[in-house]
Image (cartoon, rainbow, N blue to C red; front, side, top):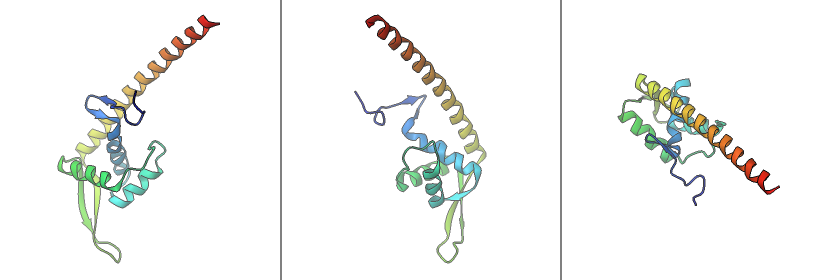
Length: 129
């Protein structure tokens, strides 16, 4: 038996451990941001259980940039070095919509599971009474 956060939960190649990707895309759909700002905002999201390590966020940002889902631009820092500001591309927005659709489908399947589980458990309890 696996711990909930250790199970490989996969749906057409999208793993729950990769949930950070749609969260980053969601934040960038609201406003272009630099990496540190994304990290701060991830910690404030009600639907993110654990704020990921910064290296994980930056790795995903680099990969999504290479894939054309986000763009980056160096902007001068106020009194410091220039910062890379990330923004969502049209391809990234499409990918975010795809994630939302996949999450919606997974949510429906999970709700069906809970109903079936509760019905089966209720029958089991009634048999023992």
